[in-house]
Amino acid sequence: MARRVLVIGIGSFGSALVEALHRQGAEVIVIDESAAAIESVKDLCAHAVVADGTDPRVLAAVEATSCDSVVVSFGEDFEASVLAVASLKKLGVREVAARATNQRQSDVLLAIGATRVIQLEIEGGRRLAEELVRR
Image 1: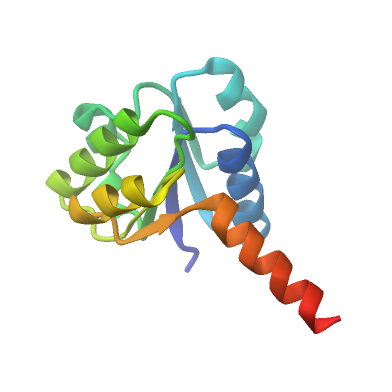
Image 2: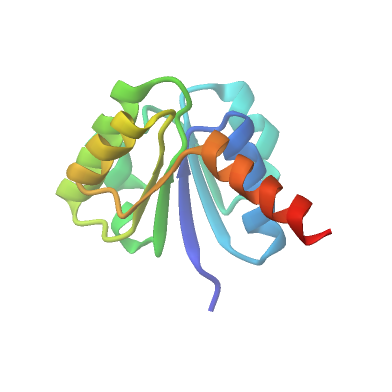
C-alpha cells in the first residue's frame, strides 16, 4: 500500500519533494495558498487544495490524521511553520517533518512536536562533502 504524504507549502523544496514522492509511488496531498503553486503540481497529486495550510479546519478537511507523514515546507515564513506544526500536533498527527532555516528555529519546531526538522543548507553541505570525499 502506498504511503500517504501531505505536503504543506509548495515552493522550490515542496515542489521537488512532491515530484520525488510521486516518482516513488506515494499518494501525495498538497496544500498551498497560491493557485499557481497548486497548478504546477496538481497532476502529481491525489488531492491538491488552494487553502491556508496552518488552518486546523483545512487540515482536518484533507484528513491530515490519516496521512503517514506530513511535511511543513514553508521557507522563510517561520510563524506559518509554527502554526502548522502546532495545528497538526493538536489534531493528533504523529509524524510531522518541518523545514527550518537555522538551529534556533529547529529547536522551537522540535519543542512543539515536529518529529523531524530539515535544514536544507546544512544537510546539503553535509551530503556534498560526503560525495566529494567518496570520489
